[in-house]
Structures are given as C-alpha cells and as structure tokens.
Image 1 (cartoon, rainbow, N blue to C red):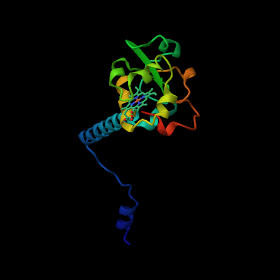
Image 2: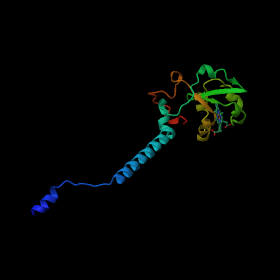
Image 3: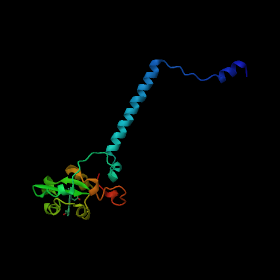
Image 4: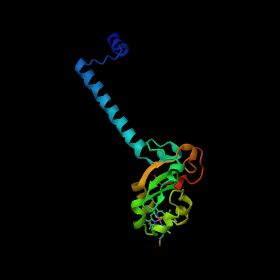
Length: 156
Ligand code: HEM
C-alpha cells in the first residue's frame, strides 16, 4: 500500500452540504416529526386500549350519581352504564326491549341489568350516541385503576 493510499484511508470522511441542503433536511425531519406526533395523537384518542382504566385521553364531563338521580322520568331519563352517563330520553320509545325496563333504572346505575340481558355489539356501539359524561373517579366501579375483570367487555 502506498503512502498516498494510507492517507486516503486515514482521512476523516467529510460530507459537505450546502446551507440549503441542511435547511431542507432539517425542515423535512421537522415535518416528519409533526406528522408522527399527529398520528400519535389520533391513535391516542381513538384506540380503545387507551380508554381503559381511566387513562382515557378524551375529556368527558364528570357527573355524579347524585346528579344522575334527578333525571328519572320519561321526559328526562339518564342512566349509568359502566361508569358512563347516558341521556336516553329520546331512546326510550325506540328501545327494542321496551321503555319500561329502562325506566326501572332511570336515574340509576343500570349496568348489571344491561349485562344480564346480553346486548349485541351493535347495542354497545349505539351507546355512544347517548353518552353525556362519566362518573367522577371516586364513584367509578368498572373503569378503575387496577381493575382486573370486566375490562374486556367495556364499551369504548
Ligand atoms: C342506552 C342503553 C341501552 C341500549 C342502547 C340498548 C339497546 C338495545 C338493543 C339494540 C336491543 C336489541 C337486541 C340487541 O341488539 O342486543 C336491546 C334489547 C334488549 N334490551 Fe336494551 N339497551 C339499553 C339498555 C337496556 C337496559 C338498561 C336494559 C335493562 C333491563 C335493557 C334490556 C333489554 C332487553 C330485555 C332486550 C331484549 C328484547 C328482546 O329481545 O325482546 N336494555 N337493547
């Protein structure tokens, strides 16, 4: 190997870029970063698994059981299912199981009755339309930190 070859091998690799190239690369990686962050945010708000155990990132109005209890009539009917509060006034007459079973739980937690009647996935999905808030953490019994059971069946 000649001396010239040794010098080439030992010389540091110098990558020369113009200021424009550097700027373009920087702005490309910045926009990639923004894109990635946006994707993360979308995933965080739409992935059900983030919604478990009170880690939900969607902000819901907190409504106490006491407040729910005032809405217990045919004209103003709220129920609680899996710690979420639903205003089902407009749904009473449309319920395939009849309005009376719903009214029996007006102003109360209806989760156990709802569970026991084996509702379909479609019924679970339709809950979203009536959701108006959630119980404060101290009143939650299904979506609590450390909860081991029931999480697999919770609606989103
Ligand atoms: C907002 C809450 C509720 C929604 C959106 C809802 C929705 C539905 C839907 C879509 C069905 C038809 C079958 C199915 O797709 O599963 C159904 C049936 C039924 N629901 Fe509900 N339901 C609600 C709350 C309740 C509650 C609290 C009870 C309490 C007992 C109840 C009792 C029944 C019964 C007994 C049936 C069966 C009717 C039959 O097949 O003859 N539902 N419900």
